[in-house]
Image 1 (cartoon, helix red, strand yellow):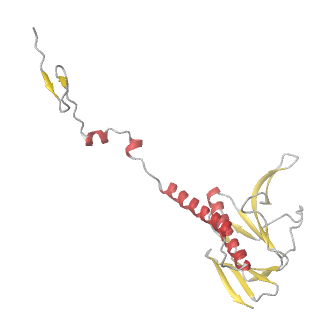
Image 2: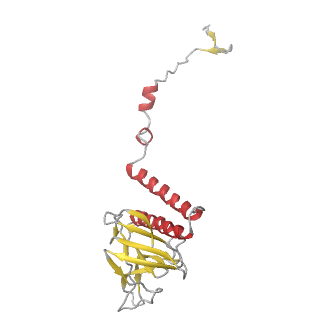
Length: 217
């Protein structure tokens, strides 16, 4: 009769060693056997850039929602414009499209370049105000605030409100936020309030630098 040998394991239980094969796992060999998609899993530079931009957008949204109680209403208006300008510029770069900015005597609005099909089936690119956008919707400072716009060193004549677009005079922005991330042309937008000596200017340099300058009249 064939004899079966029995060993006692570390747990105190007998184990039958007949025909058993001890499996030894080499950690290095195991890691080399992983699929390439798992072993080489990581983030590309593009993915990291997208995450950074999204974080910047979230910070801008938080700034627009909360604001600063220590600032005057005049300062809040200009800082909100600064945050929206940065947000719109980032959105233009991510979506690969152009966004426009137009100022009026008492406010401003953003617009998007959109491909429109008319009743005859013809398509054309038109600038349409972003009236339904939650963040880039038109903003009005109120009758007590006045905007002065200087584009490339020249004073721009501002309309009181949006005029109806026609074929002879289509709607167009004054400032363009390009998909390349550039803001053109450089401009200075000054906001002043009636019966207030505080004067705030949002300035965009030819290099695309956005800054706020304060002065007294």
